[in-house]
Amino acid sequence: MSQPDLTDLDLFAGGFPHEVFRELRRQGPVFWHEPTEHTPDGDGFWSVVSHAETLAVMVDAETYSSETGGRRPYGGTILPDLPSAGQMLNMMDDPRHARIRRLVSKGFTPRMIQRLEVDLRRWAGALLEIAIEKGTTDFVTEVATELPLMAICLLLGVPDADRHQLAEWVDYTFDFRGRNAFESTDEAAAAGASMLAYGTELIAAKRAAPLADDLLSVVAHAELADEEPSRLTDGELQSFFALLFAAGADTTRGATAGGVHALAERPDEYRRLRDDRTLLATAVEESVRWMSPSAYNRRTVTAPATLAGHRVEPGQKVAFWEASANRDEAVFADPFRFDVGRDPNPHLGFGHGAHHCLGASLARLELGVILDELLDRAESVELAGPPEWTRSNKHNGLRHLPLRLSPVTNVG
Image (cartoon, rainbow, N blue to C red; front, side, top):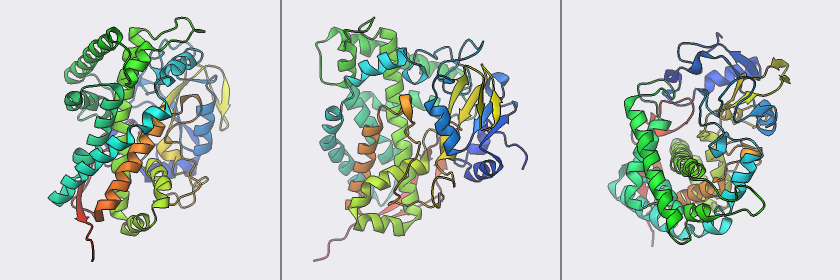
């Protein structure tokens, strides 16, 4: 097998190319990816496709930086170097990362997440009732997109009426229609500027108002007496808002749509889950493993090291593919089977170590609520047409998922 170009987005236009990565895993856990015409910055990079080596990179933040390394002025967690590396929470190293996370965690409490459940169930039920009444629905646009948007707006204290405009701006970051990954266009630049302006105005309003119970207000007013500065700056708050809104809107949508798509293709698993709701928690984890909404992340080498027998040097990029690690035959029994009862399930869909996903509990709650409410209302779920995937090697998702939902019939 010749080396596939993992930076050519056409390779990912029909979903994550699992067969390509299965062959790569057979060849070895790590390989050097030469630059091509599609590769950001014209730089080659180390590509990690196995579970063990992905985990090794994730937990070794000293050797593999989320900011930068060597003589590289910028780094980050996507393949192109970003000047914003070091400013966004997911692109920071300790000790600054730990300080920001401590402040943010003051608002991201289990109590705050759990109090959303009543609203989530009401919204999910209403969305699904409409979808079932129609008979055929685009599950992505009408359910999987809507509930996470409603949830993240409520959590952050964003007016619900603004959710679709914000989602439209975010989509330029996650779906590279007709362009290379993260390639700048006038439309993408305008969307980014609009998102920045919106966040700036919202944060100013939160700062000026008394403390409210939404997450952004709590974080805007939070202080750490033992840290300097004790509060987040406006720039740090803006980065937090942009990151959390984008992640909350997109990754949960991806995992939800991917899980329901898998169930629609496997009616036996759907019936199994309907008959045994104790499997709901494992079905949620399996949906995240199966879809792996964040297909890869990147680090930068800070010091000479050995990775799976390869010498890596300071300044080199390392991309680890969670979507490949989550199908690793060395870790998962029958990894290409969608199993709602899979246990154990050591997937890496929420990251690991210092950068474990801050919103993992919210994502689990949303996905569990949608599945539970769907199982209550739909006797069966069938594909009503071919799904349409996002064109991205970074964010694994669906644009459209036509489904036929058959309502539950009450006998007697």
